[in-house]
Image 1 (tube, rainbow, N blue to C red):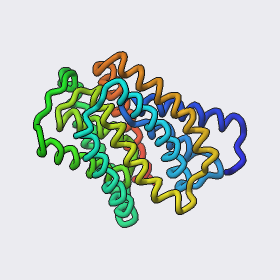
Image 2 (tube, rainbow, N blue to C red):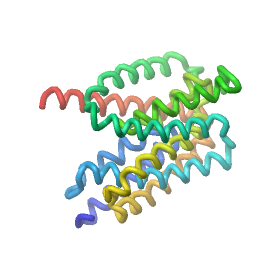
Image 3 (cartoon, one colour):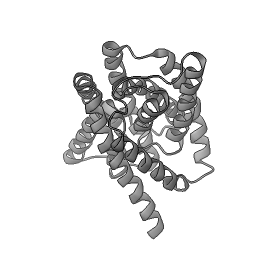
Length: 260
């Protein structure tokens, strides 16, 4: 691990805390944590990606456990989607070596604009769980969600948890709060899939990852508790803020790529 001054360490810990909170509520904590690691002096992009996954999986484990104890999320949805997401993350990582991520950013931006308009113009969306299908059709659809978004996580990454929540609400018919609970279980699988690749390649900075992960853990616990207490309406508000942040981030990446 490179030598870091106290100010840098404190800023990384703060980023981990905020990322854990945001990720536990509605996903998208990587929008905070990953850029902080990428901007840390002496750390390569691969090390930043790998170390981010260590910190994220620590926080996601805690938020998933907190949601599970309090809400008992539907495992008939979560487990097929999690397995498919693990497979998708491997496929996405392999695809990333063949197709530049920048090619997909404009598509994701268009999708996010549509999502933001949908959430803002349909205030009843995600307030109550009204599943669209049952039985095998529901499970196969959940697995398809996991496969596609797991592939996205392997290919690009930012906002994976947010996309999971949006798909579970908009496609399957869950309310925002149970969707967040299920998304945490699926997100565990995508993080684990990435680490299976990163750890053997020696890309993880373990000391830094565990330090940021401890802060992420605290933020994740507080975020999950707050989401459970305040309900789906609160999750919806945070979702709008996070989607707007993701739009700004990806939009900046596209503009920077065009002007470089």
